[in-house]
Length: 590
Image (tube, rainbow, N blue to C red):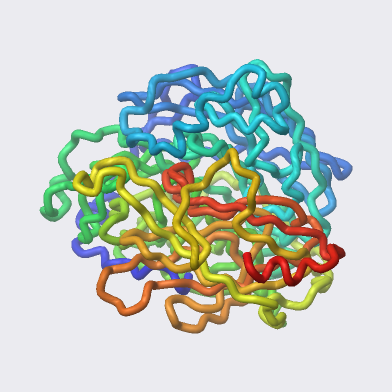
């Protein structure tokens, strides 16, 4: 995918290539609380819950339990014990989701960094303050709520509001009820908790699931009739934190700890990662990365819908046949089909690697290897900057070809009418009414101790950095519904950040001074890190779309590295109705 952080080369591929010719380990963990498959298992398909007669009703329970070696697990459960189902709806469908909170207090995770003051200050609200889930705003380790990432639904309670909505253990099941907008682009979205100060631990523990708006074959007929596979990549605390690197890896510099308490980026593409990864909950642990397995028929084409549900880990996906990276046909990014601004109804971008920041999604066509040729899904190293986490080269899943491979549970229709023309002009053809500048920055609580707690900021240019205060209702930015704005997001820190905003999509226009022309929209984008040598801070320029009436209200923007969001790197935008008189002059100063 263009305009992602430049990856370093694989260097020696002995570890990755060795995994192409060794066999997987098949086993199953027996724990009853939030069970997980064993490393090397076949990748299971998440259960599909589909709407019927325009309605999807879901009963979910969120639970947690201690995990191995001081970690914590979280899971969304259906009444039959199925975890993290994929929710499938059409534009115009009604979602009725009842969420029961059965979280319990657990000891802090072994790897948890020291909590900055912005977290601790709001972690005491209990009892009467939490009586009304719509207004309590209680930020505790046992509170939860839901964010429907990428959907353009109103930021109000019972729909997609995350600043005040807080569901406590003992509350009655909390009902989320909203209708998917008729114009919602078909593609991959997701759901996860968004309690400030605790989002990272809940998501990293496994609280996440995919949500699909059906109809991508109507937007791009090249995928019609393809079998589809949903792959949710999550990160988690290392299962083997004290293990030395695999002997098949080259010798790397001594492991260092970054400001979040994880393994720091060492710039080599190897060494201990900040977090382990899993594929549909099948762990792929350091140091040997035994891959999960995916069975396909030789030469078969499938649509892979990949969600990076990691709390902090960047992905740089590639498919290898033996040593050779294969072309992957990208058809959608962040829930938006690629041909959104083009006339070609079969637009595909072919690349041999795809960068996916935390929170982002990518949908692409993949072809299975011929008979007898080993295949492997890998993530290549991402340079996260001097202050970033270590995201090295590693395997994710072996692609095993056999004529007897089972068909995936979901398959796209072969013949469907095309989507109607968009109701609004293409965002890139609309002139912005104003330009704003924001910037990412960080501050150590003890400048002399690089491992001390860090406060993270996203600040409107011209103001002093202030960490997000969930108790404040004062917006950082006020916008009029119907307007289109350009936002320039600078990164004044030495680590990579991922900008995300709720409720809307945006168009990437400029990547660190280089003009970009992308035929799709995003809701999450990387912002390059500052290396201390350039004359200007690196930045992205984004065209922000506030035209939809469903954006009216107050919602958040933040870094989607959830440790950073929890540590203060979040702000509030308030969208007022277009009919508000005299508002134009007022917002120009904000």
